[in-house]
Image 1 (cartoon, rainbow, N blue to C red):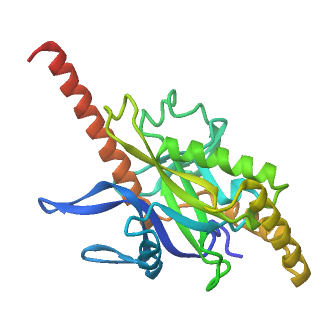
Image 2: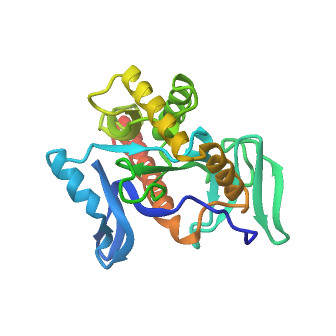
Amino acid sequence: MLKGFAITPPLIGRISIGRVVERNGKRLPEKDDQFTLTSQVQNRDGWILHPLDDSLRKEGGGKLRSIPVRLVFNDSALNLRADYSLFDRTTGRPICVGNGESCRRSGKDGVESLPCPGPNVCQFAQGECKPYARLNVIVGDGEEDALGTFVLRTTSFNTIRTLSARLQYLNAVSGGLLSCMPLELKLRGKSTAMSYRSAIYYVDLVVRAGLTLEQAIAEARERDANRRMSGHDQARLDEVAREGFANGAFEEMEEDVPAVVLKSSTRWRASQRQVERNRTDSRGF
């Protein structure tokens, strides 16, 4: 195995809840109220849709607000990798990645392991460090590719917190059979003080529609038993994935980051402009 870069789950597509549009010659992110499944190929108009996007959209009546999925690993932390990340906004390269206790920081002398005080008090990041997560899922039941995944990359705190909780809870109630649970990604909306009563959307992970939690657990146990009989070694798969993620200092490739970083940066600038407008309105001029 080549050292120095992380070995991540095989990708066949991306999942997003936004899109990039062109305005005044600039490509800018625009929020959406539905999922979009794309391939890993772009053209002049943006990411090319994956064939599953059209089929799932037809099943959902046009709006794609839920996606049937299965997870690759039983370990919650392998399915969802979340950390505090600081990226170079020019190159998209990760500079510093931490978990609130320790971090890996890239410098002129290479990558160093240092204490991580968290994004709110880090003098090095100066407020530019954000929560960042990657969720890998198998869309459907893996009929065509049992290990090929779609990745959802997000800087949404609501999404990261919700997915983290769901994964840990589902792992607990299923007896550690996350990879066998029939699940679906679900888009939810909410309004907050920060959103000024407009809807914001985040991603949730729930038992598939039409199933109770108990039914989903029973199906997971049956699927696990069938896998064991066929020789499927889930524990070894989790172990190999854990070793692969640890093989590099940073998981993200340069080409994977800019869209997410741009989206986060644009949202921040928009919120700052709204705050300033509210201050102006309150002063009466």
